Amino acid sequence: MAENQPAADAGPKTEPFPARFEEIYLSHYKRIYNYIFSRIRHRETSEDLTADVFAAVHENLERLDPSRGPLSAWIYTVARNAVLDFRKRAAYRREILGDVPETAAPETGFMESGGKDDTLRNPDNIWLAQILCRLTEEEANLLMFRYQLQLSNAEVGNILDISTDAVSKRYQRLLQKCRQLAAK
Image 1 (tube, rainbow, N blue to C red):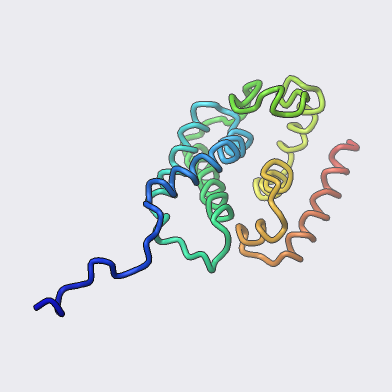
Image 2: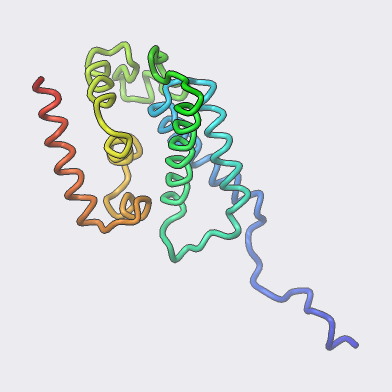
């Protein structure tokens, strides 16, 4: 009878799931929120979408396949998809997004940015926001992945499911387009 019972210790011991999720949440929350805020520019909506992203991460974490890429790439993909889905729903409801951007994300502070003003009150940032508004969603995401989230080409390739070389080429074309937009 004892041989038919499953062993009580039938596998390697792992860290408890909630502790792992808490670590993931704490290490990724600020960057995910700031990414979403930069794309939506509405504080409450950004908070809601960030919560949705981490709810999806929590719900699907056990099904994550590490062979498909790093955890961070998967989380950024979930965030990107949340923004795209929100924008599709907003367009369907004919909502206007981003007409009056807020002046700063709450997680962006003067001292955290090395003393630079990272708000939309800064003329350089207003100029950058105007360029970003003239890019496609895909182009703006590419810039956000590179400069805001500071992801490598390999990480961006994992998110977009393209090669590292393709990411590099897209960046080159996009930077050329941004230079042209800035010259106008």
